[in-house]
Image (cartoon, rainbow, N blue to C red; front, side):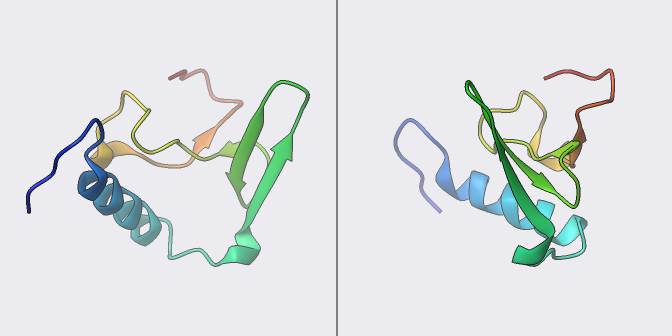
Length: 75
């Protein structure tokens, strides 16, 4: 696989697929979206479980999981 351009789209696709498998293949009914005046957050199962933005998180794709806003870890 050859990739070219500012983003490694195939790597992002594989990371998103791994995330989907690791989170029990969630269907559309498990996702939600919270909109505020200055932000938007996509979440899984509960508003506190904000999803990572693939390609923007400093975590490696292998370690991406649902991020709970109440946890002390920030990225």
